[in-house]
Every structure is written in C-alpha cells, then in structure tokens.
Image 1 (spheres, rainbow, N blue to C red):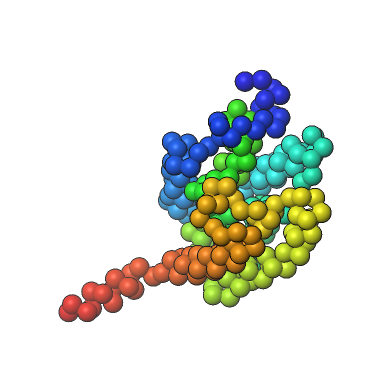
Image 2: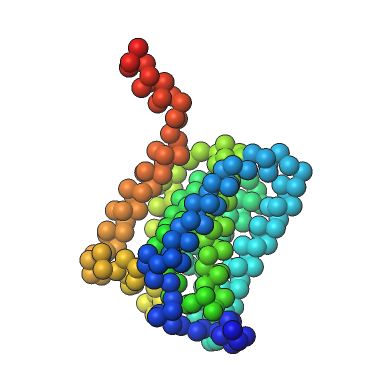
Amino acid sequence: MSFERFFGHDINFDLAMKPWSWQHFLLMFLGFLAVYLTLKYAKRIRASKYEKLIKRIVIFWLVFLEITYHIHYWAYGLFSVPLHVCSFGVMFSVLLLTTNKYGFFEILFFLGIFGGLLALYFPNTLGYTFYNMRYYHFIFLHLTIAIVPIYYYKAYDYRINYLSIYKTVGLLFTVLPLVVYVNYTYDKNYMFIGEKPDIIASLLPKWPYYIIVFLFIGMILFHVLYFISNYNYKTIANKITSCFK
C-alpha cells in the first residue's frame, strides 16, 4: 500500500464495499456493537473522573476527522464544504459534548443516529477501497456521531420530545436552499438531493420524485425513533400483565 494510494483519491468500484458483502455485514455488526457498548458503559463513564477527558478526546477526534475529510478534497483542488447531514452531526456532537445542552441533543439524536447508523447499514463509500484512508474515515466518523447522542440518552437520561422531530426537520429545510445552490453551482450531491445514493438507487423512483420518498421515509423513521426511545418497557409490561389478572 503506497502513500499516494492511501491518501489519494483512489477510486475503484470493483474493490469498493459491495452491498451484503462480508465488509457490509462487518459494518452492521460494528454499528450494533457500538450501540450496545455505549448503553452498557455510559453510566459508568459519567460517574468516572475521566469523563471530561474522554469528552475532550472525542471532540478532538471528531474535529480531526471532519477537517481531514475536507483537506483530502482541497489538497487535490476539489470543492468541499460541511453540508452533508453527517457534517451537521459532527457540529452538533461537538456542541453537545462542550455544553451538555439539551437543545443540541434533541437535534443530534436524529442526525447522529440516522446519519451515523444508517450510513453504516446502507454505506455509500463513493468507490473508496480499504486501500484508502477515506474507507476508514467513513467508518470511524459515522460510528462516533452515532454513539454521542446514545451516550447522553443513557448517561444523562436525556429524552427527545415530539417537537424535537419538527425542530430537526425545520433545521434541514432551513439549510436546504443553500444545499441546493451549492449542489447546482459546484456539481455536488450534498444530502443526496441531486442524485440517488447508489446502494438503494434501484429501489427509488427518478429525480426529483425520490426526494419526496426520502422525506416520507425520514418522517416515518423519525417517529419510530421517537416512540422507541420514549418507550417505557416496564409500564407496557405491567399493562400486559394486568390484562391476565
């Protein structure tokens, strides 16, 4: 593996991750494992005297990953700005880790979990292979922005409310005109509103109709996540048990 190949833009769709390959299943396993370990050890980490240090390390890690991503483009004269959903996930992760403010959590809960975990379950590596640093950057960044809100969910007992769904959607619609302008001006595909992601392209209708499908599916998933995250298992279990008494 050469330096140029690892840090360059070595695109090879034949060697890139294929849907339902062992690499894809490994990503899904890593996503599950990250969620499990975060839920298991979150309380212990918060009670530890090292929590502040761990937060600083995660902040540095996220900033490093985001800057590295853009430098990788700029170094080759390519255009790049932080307008991907996952870039917003990085921003809100850093803000939440720095301030512990609930307002950042309720946005990040959706952006981080869906932007992070869905990217692992439906990866779009843009043709970068395991010979290239972007392959590993993709994995590390999406794992990290997924576990930050999950950590606050468990360690700080933060919970989203129903209005959180529409705050998140409102934020995305607020930046949408800028995203459309940048996509059109610089021939980019931020938020996948210019072109369908390859891994699910065959399942979606043509542009622009697939954007409506995206919005519809996104709203359903946001509501599902809201109900799951606020689900009181003990209360439901007691209600079911009482039916048989």
